[in-house]
Image 1 (cartoon, helix red, strand yellow):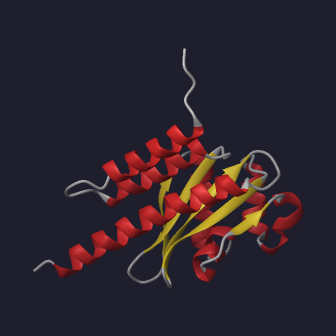
Image 2 (cartoon, helix red, strand yellow):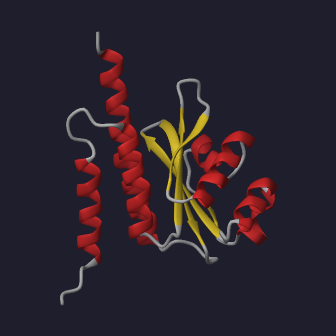
Length: 175
């Protein structure tokens, strides 16, 4: 029995993401692939994704669990939380211990802890100066993602971002 290497798993995730982009692809398929692959590859129990609509309002478009979806909806409706800040600033927001470090986001803190999430890593979905959303990686343990996991998560989010922006450009230029 052979063991699958980490490099193989990462390569496979990028192939699945690229496969979701073939032909007349559905952006929701790309986003669901992104959250599923992120959880499968990275040190996270759940993931959720907020994407800005045409008015700049963040909408929950993908989630790997009811628990993460609930926390994402709360952030979207309240307009505050690590994922919202990652979107607004274009910077990664990490809470290594939500109970100790989540005081800036009391509603998020309460919701995340009630769902069993103890840390979160929010990754902006950006291309150059444009940020279109954010990917949240929820963990049931305290602590930060490793540098490698954080880099892989950002790379997956970047590929998805480019594909979404490409799809929007094609859609907007159609007669």
